[in-house]
Length: 154
Image (cartoon, rainbow, N blue to C red):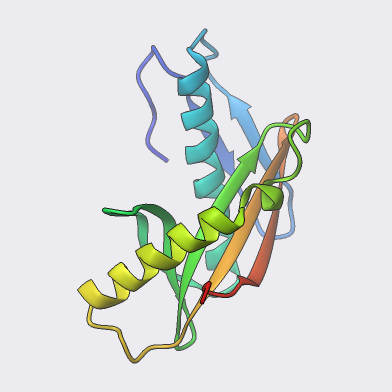
């Protein structure tokens, strides 16, 4: 994982099969709330991708941007194209990560998926929508994958 400059937090990820994922802040610094949220989001995506790859997914793209927004991860699992929304939480005071994938967000992800499929000429490929939650508890992260988390809104 790339290291950040001194003005940002630097994370060291150690993810071995069968062992908990440990997150250690190497150079703690005071940062704005936005920087911390972005760091948590990036860390969550890194942990989610590691878990998806462990489960046999092939990561095609990260942070795919379209005019509708951004898809966190686009992957392939077997013949299916999988659009993954990653939700990382430092605590559960605002509910778990899965609760943050509202019907509005589901519609946006579906619009971005249509854009991705069109741009990559994958109209005939089956696809699905997964949600990965990353709940940080002190130094350990708990990663849960919800395959087929929602259907494309009609």
